Image 1 (cartoon, helix red, strand yellow):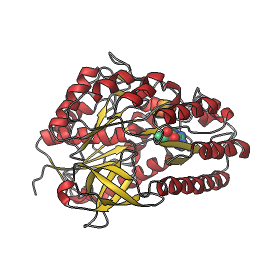
Image 2: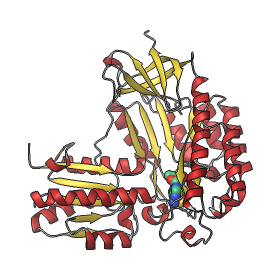
Image 3: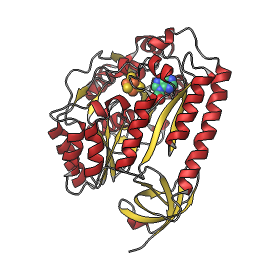
Image 4: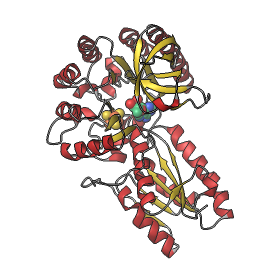
Length: 438
Ligand code: 5AD
Ligand code: SF4
């Protein structure tokens, strides 16, 4: 085993996953190889998430474990980056309580990581380099993709929305969009490299504004020869345009799925969250999406127990979930984030009530997911085959356009292609199917 090996552990969202792919790309260019085993690596990187408290806790737990490796091997270099490092109180804690950390960098200066690493290795000293602001977008960074046939593509960085619960505007800075030609060039290159599906990334892709708007970008990407599927995340309901809905009509590569975080079903709570839309507006959007694509899969994010949420407000969330009939949802317990407006709200909901509501919401969501998935039984879905199942070697796994995981038996040479699969069983969290040979 060469002594130039790295291990990256990533917490959080697709944006962080993609940043880790860039870090892996940069390290590969420096001659490093990746390893699955932390203790075998010469460089360990932890890419952190600050969106909720449980990710913070897991990060500090992981840092604690690295101490032992560092004691056995003083040349082991420990690097931490990502959203948590954009907060001064976190940097202070790391410096005081985890002195075995060698490099701290942030979300805005990933491109400088090779320089930081070289100087830390050369001078045997520690380094903290975190930028407050993103500045210009750095193009052309190398990326080592996790998957051969699907890729994440940043179209914009940052967020201007300041939802009152959310830390992201403080850790990722203000909105900055890439030029569409840069995005198109990247996507064409990915397609040449075998990519069939792209997921466009941004904290709020609907407010993308390069030389064209978001719908314009989708229309351009829909023309890229060889590209089969376009997805995007995440969307903000207040910025969904009529043009985007029309793009769903015209652009056949746009997958039959929209992830549209609602966060809450009560107008009072939505207002306190600073979401800038109402329940009625949201439901109207859902109606328009369904008019355009009747069988579109709809998923969402919901926060339970936001400060001041009453039982009546929570009932509004349950009734909205029933009305929309989501395919699935990410449900979160509200988590106080230091420095956000909601941290100061005095009417925090007691933990036991939050948990009790959370369980009721999850039960309802599971019931709806099962119903939606059962309705697909007998239908033929087009599935991008991603690989073999983690648990069963003889089973393939892939995703439908609606972002549902399907497990089925089939030959390994169809991995990386889009194939027809007949759905035989709809379960709560996935589908079973049979591969239809041509
Ligand atoms: N507490 C709980 N959930 C949160 N999210 C963002 N901030 C918080 C918080 N403080 C959720 C939102 C968002 C998703 C990515 O994380 O639902 O859409
Ligand atoms: Fe956070 Fe709101 Fe921005 Fe999403 S839109 S990243 S929830 S502030």
